[in-house]
Length: 108
Image 1 (tube, rainbow, N blue to C red):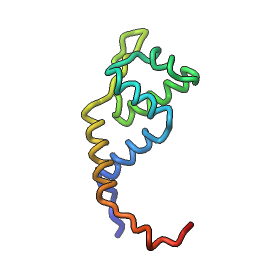
Image 2 (cartoon, rainbow, N blue to C red; image 1 turned 60 degrees about the vertical axis):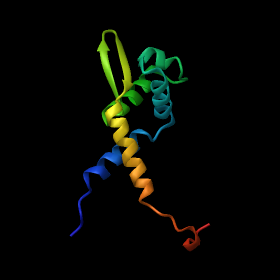
Image 3 (tube, rainbow, N blue to C red; image 1 turned 180 degrees about the vertical axis):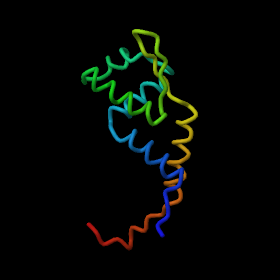
Image 4 (tube, rainbow, N blue to C red; image 1 turned 90 degrees about the horizontal axis):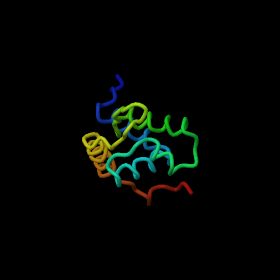
């Protein structure tokens, strides 16, 4: 019988997917240095369409890495500190638990 995925594996995969685009990494870097930021201010840092930026923000919010506060017509975003710390711990634990045996790998 195949084992199901653990809750931590599912969460880690979700965070990793959200981190899987350079625009999302940049968004998180901006938010981590400014605390909170309006989406329009974030848009000033990108050479992409607002609709594309919106999709990246939606992906990060869906993963729980950021949170947004709507004050029409503006949306203020900030890092979700609780989930950010959870993602950091899951990634740290995943990488710490794995050892790579380079000498046994013949692939070049």
